[in-house]
Length: 89
Image (cartoon, rainbow, N blue to C red; front, side):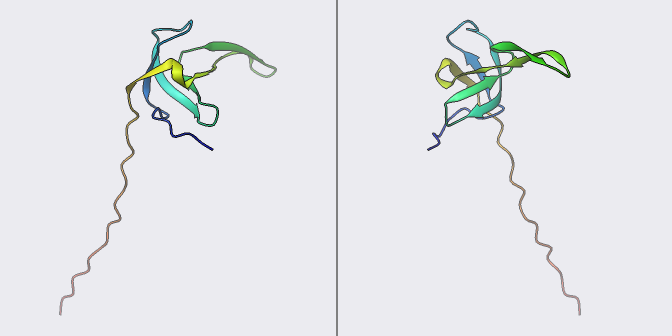
């Protein structure tokens, strides 16, 4: 069962606990089943790839360790435009 999370992809958050305390960034990815999120520039880990060599990637942190600063911008729904045809006799 997925939990309804207030923090969505693209939201601005601040880390409130841990080694990255005080850092701010935007949410890259959300795992709602495990209550984990990835924040840009927080918990950066090195990863070795055979083709690309050493890479720096963000790791998951717990949902409860961040504070929401600014929610993600809502996507505007495009209204269906109905073309009204005028009848001229």
